[in-house]
Length: 114
Length: 115
Figure (cartoon, rainbow over the protein chains, first blue to last red):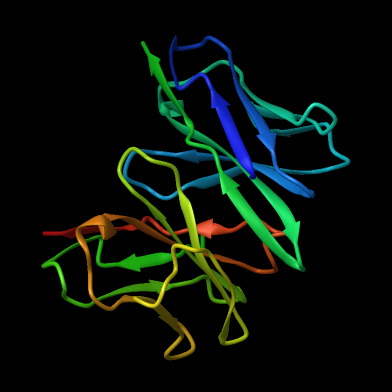
């Protein structure tokens, strides 16, 4: 069964600090992995998308890594800002009979405090 | 910047009633999706739509659900006879190409409350 596990469930950090969120998956055959940011009561917004051959991808202060061998990904946030407070969701896609099966993680709830 | 728009933002309905959730995808996008998120739970895929037909659906998307693209701009999700457990945030998304190649852009969601 395809699963995406994220840790920690929640995290509180001081403004300006860095943090790293983890995602482990058991999805196959792997197609791509995305990180989304979801503000409370809003739709998810894409941060990065990584395919099998990509190890690292950056988007501003966000850097995602992917280890396809260990089936792990991380999202590193540098110099956090109050506006980074949100849920961060890891989403993994698998190829299935020509279609994409998408599995969402439950997300890590990040709170950045002054 | 183009965006996916959803209406209404909040819908309250009585159990057993039919509801239609509306979405206007980004204009040059060809693939459309519906997802739902029950409060406190993860986002779940419902259905994808391409070329005027369903291309994929999850086990959640049973006979009480249907989707339609009634004109060139709208994409709707109909729930025929709502149940209490249908209460959730429903997100519409669209993408230029299939999910394998491009990102999907999400709307702000419709919060459906079934009473």
